Amino acid sequence: MKGNSKNLENDNPRMVRGYAILAKGNEPKEIKRNVYKIPSQSGNGDYIVRYIDGKYSCTCPDYKYRKVICKHIHAVILWKKIKEKLQKEGIEEAKPITCKFCGSSDVIKYGKKNGKQNYMCKTCHRKFVLNEGFEGMKYNPKIITLTLDLYFKGVSSRKICDHLKQFYGLKVSHVTILNWIDKYITILDNYVRKLEPELGNAWHVDEMMVNIKGKWRWLWNVMDDETRFLLASVISKERKMEDARKVFQIAKMNGGKRKPKYIITDGLHAYEKAIRKEFITKGRKTIHIRNVGIRDGLNNPIERLHGTVRERDKVMRALKKEDSKIIDGLRIYYNYIRPHMGLNGKTPAEEAGLMELNGNRWLKLIKQAVKENGMSPTPT
Image (cartoon, rainbow, N blue to C red; front, side, top):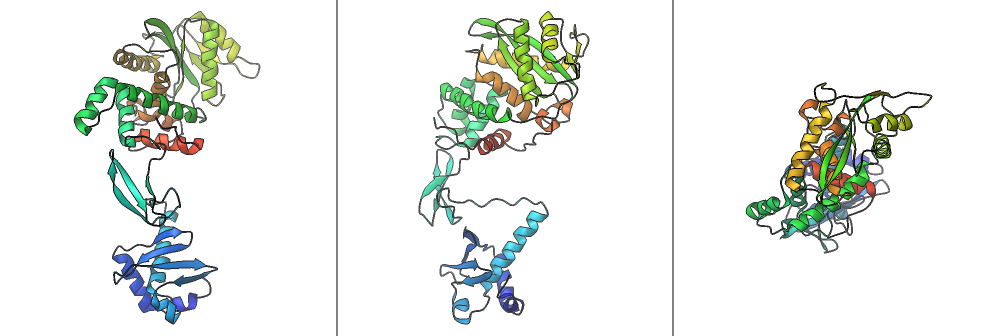
């Protein structure tokens, strides 16, 4: 501190009283940049401490009439030093709640509605809800992310409705649940497609049949061997070379445009031609390992994935459309949400060096997507 640092060093009694303020749990609140509010110890309102042009000032009588560094200024200085030390040691501090309209931290809780905590700003007197990425939504973000998690774990939308009604007293229709899935999977898919995972040298590729509105279609999946990261999930009507090329193009795009050293497939002829078109160049040749089946064991990772998809497909009683967000949702769930025993409890995203999500993974991933995309989902 400049200008009045000498007074600070010689003002020990006031410094001790400043420590006592913090010891009682009366922390300063930064209501604006370099402007702090701190409670009066007599219980008669608050005082404002400012730091302008290298000097502190306070609205309390001690500073006003004696022009000395008061206990309130000492409390603010110590509080700031503690925060800086925590940051240097890498200890994450809980972020103060600030008003979404004026930025003030002079905020109080103001009751609940639909399970969401409301707040009121004492500076601008406006009320708001903290819903990063959930603005305009009627229901609590934890309820929405719980719904996503249950659905992609294999619980039907109608059973989820019953669960919400039984345990939370909420009447949510299965149509609303499907709308949530469509909305948030779109947000997440737009975000995760921009990420570049660190992959191994081999990709597993296989296709399976899925029922879409009573018609059988092919679901192609491409997975990295080392990280179990699912690079592509694509639906097609046929299994021609053009279909396989489209799958590989999407896999390359999601893999940071890198080419694997090996591609492991079954004996479908379309793979051989598509691999020659998409991967074999003068500079580097991708080796195609084909005619691999369950008995060989080489394609076991992707076979296990297909088992997961089949379980989900039974609950959904067939997908309703070919461009369903359910397929993208399964890929996101598989890569970012679900821990894998084969990866020692990690997700493929963690293994691929992308991100580690603890606690409510859905909620944290949605907040990150909204932050990176610089947008907020449209209310429904």
